Image (cartoon, rainbow, N blue to C red; front, top):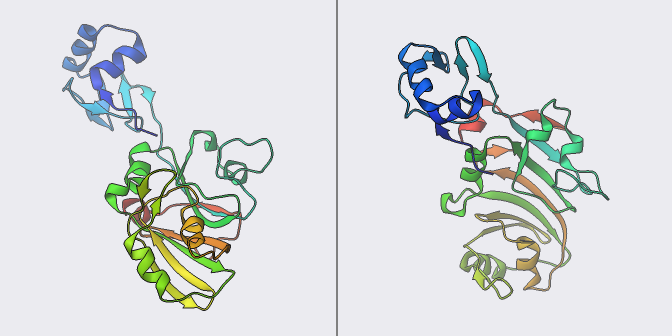
Length: 233
């Protein structure tokens, strides 16, 4: 989801239904404030989180929202679903309908889910060009070997999409458990990569996205706002 950015004069013109010539007069007379400061520049770029007042009347005061959720197995990463409870259903937030999911988890995957109404922030986290790592703990049906490590490092070709995955990191924890770091989010990517070894994934849990770690004190199904440091990345 993209952030809604616009020039200040266009924004005011659309919201107050006045022509831009009148908006320029408002700016010249000091009638407009953006984020508490007098605005004079018609070319000033504002977005959905800019606090905008005209003649001391607030015409926009949206707040950016950043949420961490400990997703349980059996809950879908969707805003609406006819069959299953959704991550939105788990939230106790007044503005939860305005949030979108930052990197979905499968129905049977648990762990860290991030939600926000800030499109630029979510795009930065999910864009493969930014190489933000997503760390997962994976439990497997069959034993692991060192061959898995090199195979994940090289990336794997997915014929259906005609793409080769970005290199991924795999650390063997014990005979049937691994930590995997992905830098993209292909469809069922981890399950498909282990599927090349005919080794079914029997448990998948996301631990972190970039520097944002799932809070160990956050109970399954519970959520909390992100801290300032977590938001900054």
